Amino acid sequence: MTARLKGHAEARGAALRRLPSVDDVLKADAAAVAIDRFGRTATVAAVRAALAETRAALRVGGDTPEPGVSSARVAEAALARLVTDARPAVRPVFNLTGVVLHTNLGRAVLAEAAIEAAVTAMRRTIALEFDLTTGKRGERDGLVRDLLCELTGAEDATVVNNNAAAVLLVLNTLAKGREAIVSRGELIEIGGAFRMPDIMARAGAKLVEVGTTNRTHPTDYAAALNARTGLVLKVHTSNYRIEGFTSAVPARDLVALARDKNVPVVDDLGSGTLIDLARFGLAHEPTVAEAVAAGADLVTFSGDKLLGGPQAGFVVGRRDLIQKINRNPMKRALRVDKIRLAAIEATLKLYRDPDRLVETLPTLRHLARPQADILAQAQRLVPALAAALGDEFEVTADACASRIGSGALPQETLSSGALVARPRTERGAGRALERAAKTLRDLPVPVIGRIADGVLVLDLRCLDDEAGFLTTLASLRGGADALA
Ligand SMILES: *Cc1c(COP(=O)(O)O)cnc(C)c1O
Image (tube, rainbow, N blue to C red):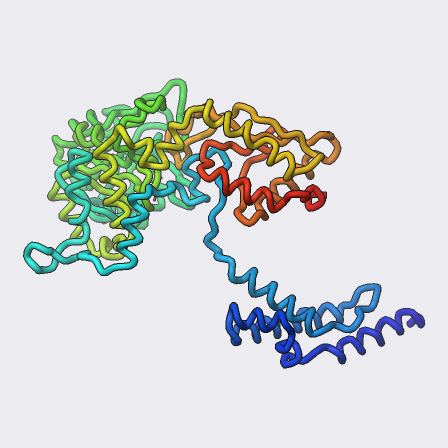
């Protein structure tokens, strides 16, 4: 060992021996602040952790020996650790991805009316399964059943955890140990391991595929229908589209075929909108009422996609089938809680006044927001983003295209506006973009954009809180260095 290295080792040993005790650290100012904010137990644990970390760092050692570590420094490290750990894991972010219903960002933002209803349900006891007229036990689904029937024209309705649960429950109730017929063109996978064949297997139904990927005809279904058939399933091919030489059998024709054999037809709409989106300039997406009117015996759809409510799955349709579903023990395992029921009821009630939905329902407000409005906002915000990102980037307000997301109208884009950050030099541009995106994700309220074609795009379609966005960007002021 050289004299220099020996010197380092000795200095490290001395620093280790001189490390303050837990009690010493607890006397430091920062420890008092920590105890006041987080309590003694958590502070002692954080101090121990900070000491262990310091000890480990000293053992590994750098090239330069550490000077003695003070109690104050360990206490500050402990406080910093407690502050970081206290940050909620469920954090708000700015969704500037350009995907309105982003599954990874929690899909629909709820309406104020739904939020108020949910808060009341959290704060108060409610008549959840209690009939206030008779004073006897009531039904939890009864709270929203009539509304669902009113808005869809269905005879009866039930609610579960999400649409995946709705499909599982319907298959299990009507086709357990029996056959379920599906077109090969509709055997979809939706993100997050929801694959129709797997759900079928778990539901105990035997999948009978008919037709081909691109074309399925009425005769294909007719040939597969038999005494073992539990149901015919029509699945909305939410997240993709087959184009060219294609043919599918509309639900109405399936109903005519299956009714002869007394087999129910189930239409899984996926997103399931309650109103015609064409009135907002979007492509027509079949509404739940249309699916019911086409004669499907049951229709399933999501609560937090185009409907704009909380996560939920709805099954509407024939009363005898809904009753059968409600008697399935699985229903109990898949039911929704009082908080969501309250939010669902309030959301559905907004649909009684469709003319005002653009004001009352954030999802529709976002979808219907005019491009001119978004571009004007982008113009206003150019200087703030330019200041936050520094000289390395040129920031402009440009047109862009948003998507609806969550498998609704996958082909459809909405003309939108964005803040676009373009690296000024080509060398290292890719890394600069990644760094900028990371910097924005690290903000107090993380900003999530997308990198495409050599630029960072912040689509402002869903930016409601402009002031909050400016505040979070301002924490980077002079922060060009943070990017370097
Ligand atoms: C999204 C979707 C589902 C799953 O709905 P979740 O509410 O996400 O559980 C099922 N079927 C189709 C066709 C869908 O688009």
